[in-house]
Image 1 (cartoon, rainbow, N blue to C red):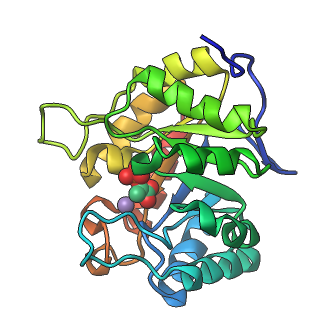
Image 2 (cartoon, rainbow, N blue to C red):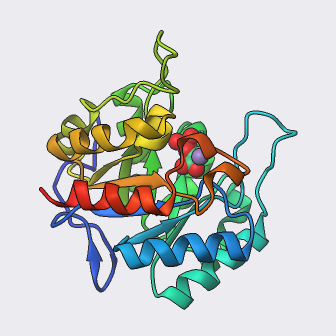
Length: 257
Ligand code: PEP
Ligand code: MN
């Protein structure tokens, strides 16, 4: 099997942030809904100590009738808030024709679970030098996930961060089954940083803290968690989102190892 990704490499987001030393904490709402919602959430997260803000602008929703995100307006809001608070931002790119737009607004590109097999998209992000968070496909084997990362690397971009976000199993008690075995395996197989998204991985807010502790215990390099300043009003994934008080407590607990 041909492979480029084997050696451990430090992945850097900017002059002050790289993966490897302390866990990189990524947080923010599922979806950018308005300037006020994103700014208020982001301001609270920055004060807590978050390293990177997340938020969707182009959303891969199961139903075409569900809120699809604000599109470019959402990216504009994200970029503005990122500059105002001096914090890097990440958002999901769903369509290769939007790459130039994303490059203007975000510091990190995200390839979502549904697009892990979108080889045209992987090739296009492979031609940029922006760091890419590559989420595991919800039914992807370890081998398929490694090969998706190889698609990006073989087109020139080795700045890849892998994200375990849960897989589909026979059990539907949780939204997905968070496969933490993938963390040490993917680190050993690729040398890349591996982060964990316990929000989509479980779909349940009360499971975020214990699964995050477990993720860090098995070597995860960071955590991506959904946080909304008013989860009960969220247009997407409110049930799995923490509010700012919950996230403050969560952050204190996971960082006090
Ligand atoms: C997300 O992080 O916004 C998201 C849609 O997650 P996933 O691709 O893991 O479903
Ligand atoms: Mn979500």
